[in-house]
Length: 409
Ligand code: PLP
Image 1 (tube, protein in one colour):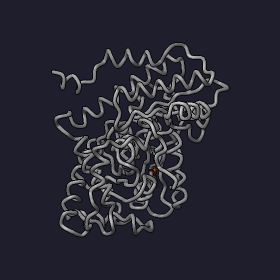
Image 2 (cartoon, rainbow, N blue to C red):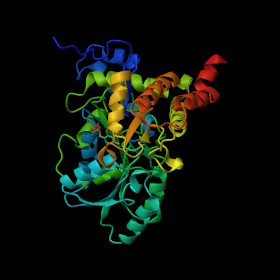
Image 3 (cartoon, rainbow, N blue to C red):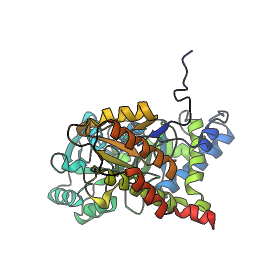
């Protein structure tokens, strides 16, 4: 019999930017027996997770949960609010923005892809002024939606979503604002209602610390209104029937019961007032990001994100010197030290690797991952300026985690 126990000693270090490690508490919750998805216990579970996930998106409006990966939720977002041939303005921040644009084109939308030239756009967040200028020029209001990625997982660059909202408002344009926060949600600050987002797309396998398999659309009243007249064919993804049945905690089809047990647990963990709730979650990922960047700087390597105001608290992209294949370095780190790092994607293939600091981490899991990186970089012949491990240790030791201090007091 082949075994699934790939890592026989100790824990594997899953430091890719999602799927992120699943805490034992969530794994245990997902092992409860599967129940009747039309029975009374399920209705209570459904109501509980819908309430919890809305708090994570920071919205008072519906959040739709699909038994699908994030890609499904991208398609759901587009098909619910657009009609064939509609013009959508998208912004190239990296590989995932490019994949979403490709999907929109395949669905029959007319996509326009803004961005900075060459790799520049992959090192900086959305330039909101470019969106404002483009929308001002669209005096006939042909553009139906503006689509941006909040945390570009392929690069480690975030985008200022409030600035995009303000750009749309400054242009006095009625386009919907659609945001992919698949890897940002529940690690990086995100406020669906306050930032005036119409549709936010997310997935389970990143900040929510769940396995892959469920994904989300958070929807504003304006998006729901638009969905009533949108003509794109849709059935499984259609919001209306789901929102109706969700009122009782049910779905029109068989939901992913055990992943929803996990989601209930994840919401309890992330929102727990005794641990500081969402502000504490965002603060700890910021801090971990700073610690990891201290290591990269000490190594003398470049961080993929070139604008410090939009460093990602979710992951850090580490650029390799000329002549070093990032995937070969990753392979050494995996084979010798049992640590998985994210590969470079699309235009960044072979040029960088990605260290995830999302989901269920702590200072010492990150220190271990950085040790694996440092040993692997040296074994791969990369000349390091100094020890990144020592720099990260100094950072973590001199910047105590606020929650742990509270515990000690
Ligand atoms: N968008 C972003 C920003 C992502 O990080 C991912 C996956 O990593 C996706 C979209 C696609 O989601 P999925 O792979 O769950 O379909």
